[in-house]
Length: 539
Ligand code: GAP
Figure 1 (cartoon, helix red, strand yellow):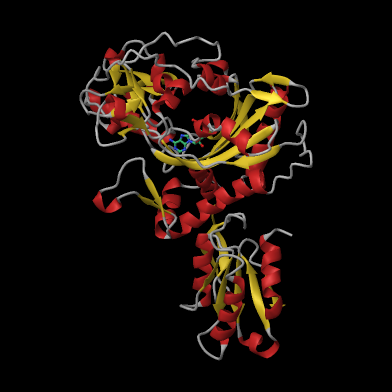
Figure 2 (cartoon, rainbow, N blue to C red):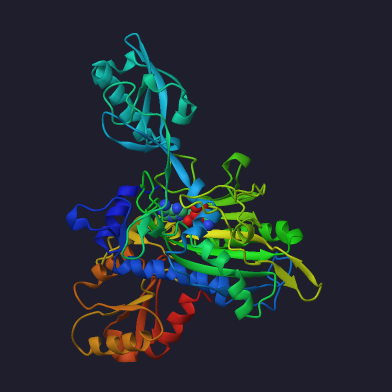
C-alpha cells in the first residue's frame, strides 16, 4: 500500500527519528537532526555499510561476480581541505546548478526542477509553472491559472490544458510563464549559474586567499591520499578505499524531507584497478551495491538500476549507473537516486597530479588566478602506481560507488512504514503502525517487559535485560498495559519483545513476540539471549 509522506514525517517526529534542525527558532531549511531513534537507525545503516564493504570483506576469496580478489581499507579525512583540491577536481568551476529567481515572489528555484503545462483561457495562452509535477501539483496549477484569469473553481472547464507536463528548461521565452508562486506573467529571471559549495575562511584574516570550502563530497580525500595509503599499507591494485562522513552542498531547493539536504553524510568507495579491467569492476560494483539494498530489506519492486544517458554524466564520469528507489513523495513511476556507481577513469588522480580539468585532458594551467598563479596547477606529485610483478607504471582507473547515508536511511524508513491490524490486549483487531526494519537496522533489537510490576516479574525481566544489554541495544519497559507497550515498540520497529509473565515464575519460560508475524512462542529464560541473537542475525 503506498504510504502518505505526511504520516511518516509525523511518526519520525513523534517517535524521535528526525527533527527539523533549530526547530525552536523556526527551523533551518535543508538541515535535519536525528533524534534518539534516528541516530541508532542511521548508525546501523553506516555500520552495515562499513562492515559489509570493509571489515568483513575477505581479500582471499573472489566475491561472486568479481573479476578477482581485492583489498579494502578505510580513511577519515577532514571536511575542509586545501582549496586547490576543489580547483583540480573541477568543483570550483563546474559544480553548479542553474537557478531562476522570481522577481515578484522572491522565490528561488532550480531551473531543472520547475515543470509546467501550457493552458488557454479567456483568449490568453500561458505556461503555468510548478515545483511539484505530481497530481497535487497539477491541482495547485489549476487554482493558480483560475486565479490569474479571475475565474472561480466552477469555471475550470474554461481552461484548455495543452500537451503534457514539461520541464521549464524546454521553454525559450519566459514572458508567458506564470512562476510557481507568482500572480503575474513573466516574473522569472533568465537562468544563472550557482556554485553549490559552501565557502568559509580559515585563519584570522578574511580575504580571497583565506577562502576555503566545506567539502561537497568525501571522494577527493581518497584521491589526494592515494599515495599515502599505498606507502603506509601493503595494498596492491585492485583495492578500494572507503570513507564515510559529512558533505555539504548549498542546494537551491532542499526538499522532500532529508532527501535533498544541505548537510548530509556520504558513504563512498574509490576502487582503484588496472584500466583494462575497469569495465568488469564497474559491472561488479553496480550489482554488488544493488544487492546490498535488497539484502537490507528494500523491495525489488521499488528499487532499480538505471544507466545514465551520456548528457546526464557528471563532468568527470565516462559511465554511471544510479541505484534508485521509488520514494513515496515522487510522482507515480518516478524514482529518486540512492547511490551513484561511476566509472571515473583516471580523471581525479591525473587532475591532482597534472592539473588537467576533464577526461579530454584539456590543459588549463594557462588560466591564472588573481595572484597570477596558474589556477589549475596540480600537486606535481607522482600519483601513478608501480606494479612490482609486471614492472609497469600506470595511472589506475577508478570505480566509485557513492551512497548517501541519509538517503539510504530515508529509503529504509519509507520501506519500513506499514499500517495493519493486530489484536489488542482483549484480542480485538485494531489498527497499528509498524516499522518493519530489517533487524540489523532496527534501533532496538528487542524489548523486555514484565507483564505486571509485581510478583518478582520486574526482577526476572531486568535480569534478561542486563544479559542482553552488552550484546545489543535493548529496551526495558514496565509502564502501562502490555498491549500498549507492544504498540510502542512496533512504532519504532523493535523486531522482538520478550515478556515475563505468571508462567515464568512457575516454569522459567518467557514469551517472545515477533513484530511482523505477531507469532508468540515460549523459551526458557536461560536461552533467551541465544534465541534473540539467533533471530537478529537472521539464522
Ligand atoms: N563523489 C560522487 C558524488 O558525490 P553524487 O551523486 O553527487 O556523487 C552521491 O552524490 C550520493 O550522495 C547521492 O547518491 C546521494 O545519496 C547523496 N547525496 C548527494 N547530494 C545529497 C543531498 N543534497 N542530500 C542528501 N544526500 C545527497
